[in-house]
Image: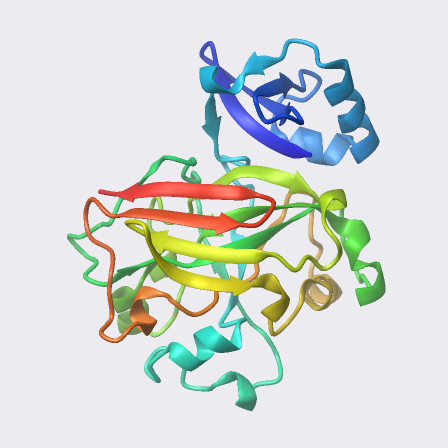
Length: 286
């Protein structure tokens, strides 16, 4: 199932996209996506979809980011595809994957995620090297603590797409990633959350990014260096992952900094992040 947050008749609701993709069925029992994740299961969502009450044509609603206001920073994996590791200049990654046995984790501060079709503020008064990173994001479905890898699938509610927008020059200047990845509007998300039962675990999905129609990133989530079971298990051994926690799993080669010569985003550029079975996240830079 595809679960969305949407606006209709000046009211923000959560709902389920119909099987034919033409309607959204309000899940009126839940006020927010967090309520839905915490209080429901896949069978209950299926029941709501089957009843099909109050369905609204999709072209009459505005689809918002599925989790508009994350309760915690987004947990991110840095350099989690070997291809991305290979393309990055040394000043961005002093130690390559082959020399490192553990993942790189960092957090991305987000006040409001950017909607599908929303706008990315380039902050060009302070940013000269604006970049894109298409990523598969995992949404935790229930409290996870001391999870074994073999049980990790039980803790996944679903998956969405995140564009981990990055100010490369800010990242290098500060010698850490938090500020350069956390400027306002640097977290487009969506267009939906696809429930975990729709995919094998861990999912092996085509992942692509286009800029102004040009294919830049083209890979598959099966190439994650540190896979989703490992990530959930390791993180949960040291911290409690609450329902609704968002984990962005990393980006493949083809980022602007990795091209020769580098090609950074500019005002007016359109960035499309697509993942098989989830959809396309389309945003314009201003």
